[in-house]
Length: 429
Image 1 (cartoon, rainbow, N blue to C red):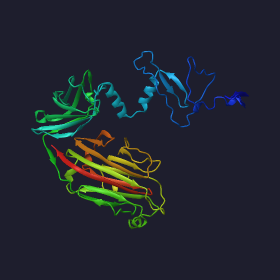
Image 2: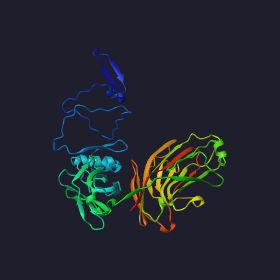
Image 3: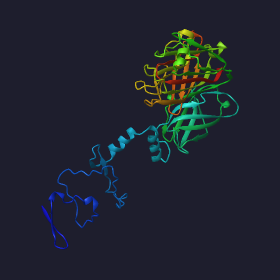
Image 4: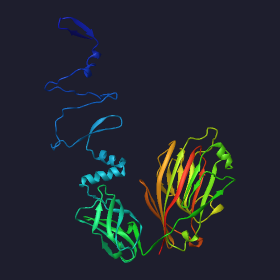
């Protein structure tokens, strides 16, 4: 025990183990030489209350203050040099956060090697006028004077310097102003020099300069193909667009010839009024957009497996030959814990992006897809706010035609919609 003496010389006895328990409620003032010397591990539990250290001296310019204070997952505090903490932060940072940090270190001038992921538009008609190209990629915020942007003719290697360019502070885009009529027709890549750093021209995205773009009116008819006796009756059609709509209303499903407990297999494919539109004997440029949405506002009396798988794009085959896939375009996995909501792939199964995990309601937004067919090669550009990818495939010219197609397999207790819109079509010459 400990005996305490009051101002009136009264004594009180208390347990010695209770000494110091009210330190946290006391405004303590240290005396010269005072401190706390730990004899073993010691824990301060803040119990989710804010903990402040105020009035510290400023030591930013003191060379001897070069250490960091670090904390591990258990809450232990220790002295560290900061290297692993900083590198660990970069590993978990987003690409945008890493780019912003690098730009801040270099007065907003990109320090890494430039990379060109896309040139827009990718096919340009040779006109005697100023035209504007947008270069997209990373590390594109260039030095104000020690820089160069040039078109490189793929066939000849000849370079054509672009004197009028505008960069963006995020380092992701360059706008080029140029009269392209001074260039020979052909295919071009982009060369970028930023100080002593140059991009890999051979892997740069390219664009084509052509003599004429023959824009073709898009006027398609869509055939609603029934599989297993099922025919979707609520989908909407126009000359350049189809919107697939599937709900799980019992009456609607029975009217379509679909058992309320059976998965939906619905196929829609276009047949062009003019076979020349996507004739593989011709080169073409086709811009399109897809969108899709999902809701779990389903009928409680219906139970089936989770998920929607959809294919949208171009197919060699039509009618009942189109059963399981398309040849070129996008595959959508939408809904369900196993599929993951909003995953997008190429038709060949290469992951594009868009996985946001399981959600009860989902709007996939718009994904722009550009198909460029030149000779025996079909180049496909996928673009939205998070996806920017270009893939190339050899096409089977013996198939003669490619048909815009949409194939939906909806096996979910959900309402699902998908749209395929053909925006612009040109026959190249």
